[in-house]
Image 1 (cartoon, rainbow, N blue to C red):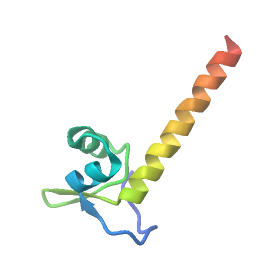
Image 2 (cartoon, helix red, strand yellow; image 1 turned 90 degrees about the vertical axis):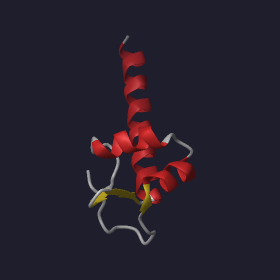
Image 3 (cartoon, helix red, strand yellow; image 1 turned 180 degrees about the horizontal axis):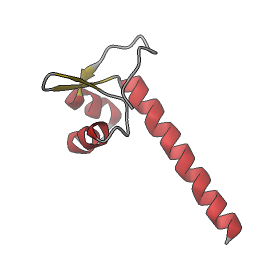
Image 4 (cartoon, rainbow, N blue to C red; image 1 turned 180 degrees about the vertical axis):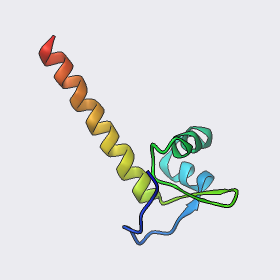
Length: 75
């Protein structure tokens, strides 16, 4: 899932994005390389849009929370 031009915030290096999001750099890099968060690979640099990554993580969190509720109801 690579980032689209849907936001006006700039792309930043993975280290800066990790700091702004409060997550480890290695974890964020791993998520981006596995296409689990939007990213842009430019040469050797990995760039992220913090707002887009935050949105993706929130969506994933909400989806996981919903799945947990469904499992609890069916148990």
